[in-house]
Image 1 (cartoon, helix red, strand yellow):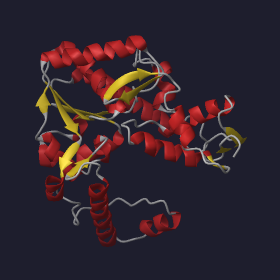
Image 2: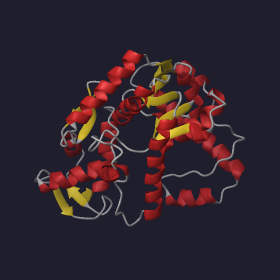
Image 3: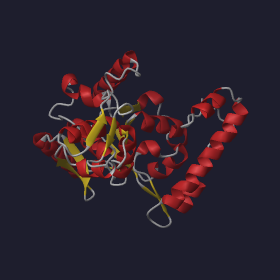
Image 4: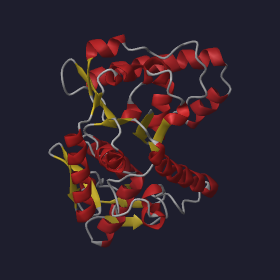
Length: 321
């Protein structure tokens, strides 16, 4: 039995929750694909050259460790090879997420001809009463560290004793739970748009509701993946609740709506656009948004006031701002 998910955050959550769901599953049996098949050329996703810019879009950033990026890529390619060893699978994914929807279709296409049991655990809506019963952070568990937006607070946390870190982490967990309930668009329900954003304590709820895909369902997912490969558009996105092939400028209007009137760092627009797109089920990379900002600037649809190698250095504004 293997669990298959998409991204390191999802694997981390599953690794923490596995003992409450399936103690026999070892961490090594949780396979996390790091590539984003909602972007780029997917005719052959094992083609390293074709997938390099999507798998590690931050290449060339002077603040990032080149060795780490190489190891990140190798870890992903090893996982793809391990798919051939899978004898039974539970695929974890979020229903309204283009990245994980594309990943689901690819993995099913790989496993289909093996005729093995394939289960799916879909992380999406959860009743508030179930959410409230979910196991919170264990105050007795160790905490590796806490990272915030404040460099000063991060420095304080590095020297904080474990018992205080545990107490603070539990407090953050409680606040995030309360905020998620208040922000839910559906009364009495809590929503997750990616597996990686789910608290480990709530995952057993979705695991109990896993179901085995029928042969017909697997064949349908394989057909959809084959269609997207043949279309091979630059992007795939959630459109009216379904993953569809779309052109490279699909997100441009959303990005433009996030550009400020006054000169500001492009990082502000990137952050705003990521949040706005996530509300539609489209979790895209920051570097995709940045590449479109460059294209929009070259096309005269926004003004690049000061160019820069990264969106932290570039400044932009609306035309006529």
